[in-house]
Image (cartoon, rainbow, N blue to C red; front, side, top):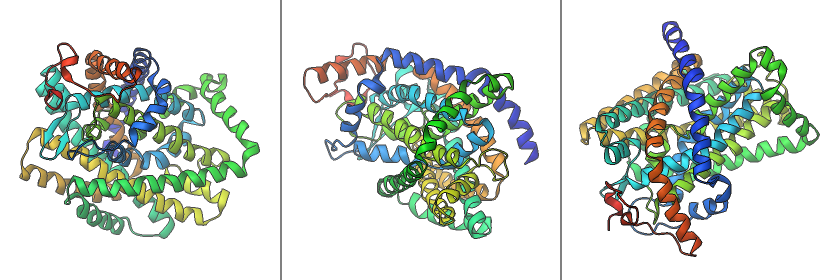
Length: 463
C-alpha cells in the first residue's frame, strides 16, 4: 500500500494543482454566464420539475432519477470527505467547496441536459451518459469506450471501496467490530440489491436517501441552534481562512482551495460525468428538465448536506490539532461533544445508510457503462462480482490509499468529461433556450429535436 501512496500522491498533486481546479472554475464561470445564471434564475423551476410526474410508462420519473444520483452523491463525501477537507485544509476549505458547488450547478445542468438529448432506449428504460454523447454527438466512439471503462473502474470499484472503507472505519471505531466481518455483511447486502436490477436500485434509493438526509440535516440544525451565538464567528472564520493573509503566507490558501475542490467534487460530482448516467434514465418531456433536476442535486448535496457536516465540526472546535482524528471519526467526535455520546452511534448508522446507498448508486453508473462497452450478460455478471470483491477489499484498506486512488481516478474522469461538454456546450445552450422560450410562453416545455437546427443522433426525441 505504501507503494500505491507513493505513486498516486504526486500524480494527484499535479492533476489537481495545475489542471483540474482551474478547469472546473473556468468552465463553471463560462456555463454560468452562457446560461444566464441558471442556478439562481430558475431555482424555483428546479423544485417544480423535480417532483413532476412521469409522462409515460417508460423509464423512471424525474424524482426517481434525482434519488439515483443522490444515492451516489450523498455518502462518504458528505460526512467523512468534508471532515477530511477541514482537517487538512482548514475552515477555508468549506468556502471553496461552496464555490465549486455553486458554479458546478451550471456544469451539472449542461452535462445532464446533454445526457437526456443523446439517451437511448433500453427495453422499458432509458440509458445514457458521457460515453453515449461522445459517440452519438461527436462520433468519438473510442473515447466513449475509454471513458466508460474509466467510469466503471472509478465508481464500480474505487469509489465503492471508499464507501465500504468509511463504513468499516466508523463501525470498527464505535462498536469494535472486525473490518473483515463488516466487509462480509456489506458484500451480502450489496449482492442482494444489485442482482435485483435497476428497479430494485430505484426503490431502495427513493426511500433511503431522503429519509436519512432529513434526519442528518435536522441534527445539524439542532447543533447550530444550541450554538447560535457562535454562528457569525464561524462564518467569519470560514471566509477569513479562505482569503486570509496568514493562510496565503503559510501556503495554507492553496491547500484550502485544493481540499475544498477535491472533496466538493467527490461529493457533488458536478462535471465528473457520473450523474448524467442517472439523468438519462428519466422520462421527461424536455431534456432541460433533467438538467435542472440534477443542478438542484448539486445544491442539495453540498450547500445543504455537506454544510451540515462542516457546521457540526467547526462549532465543536475539535478540527484543530488532529488528536480527534480525521474523516468520519472527526465527525463522530464533533457531534458527540455537542449532543452526547449517542451521536457516535447515530453517525455510524447515518454513514451506513449514506455510504451503502452510494455503493448502490455507484454500481448502477458502472452497469450502464458496461452496457455501452459490451452488452451481454457475462460481462455484467463479471462486473457485479468484481464490485463485491472491491466492497470487501475497501473495508480492509487504509483510508489514505482509498482516498488517494479516488482522487486520481475522478480527476482523470473529470478532465475528459469537461473537455467534451465544453465542445458540446452550444448544443446544451440551444436546448436550454428552447426550454426558456416555451416557459416564457406559458407552456409546459416539450422538446422536439427538429426544432434545433443540425441536431443529430437524438433517437428518443425524433418523433
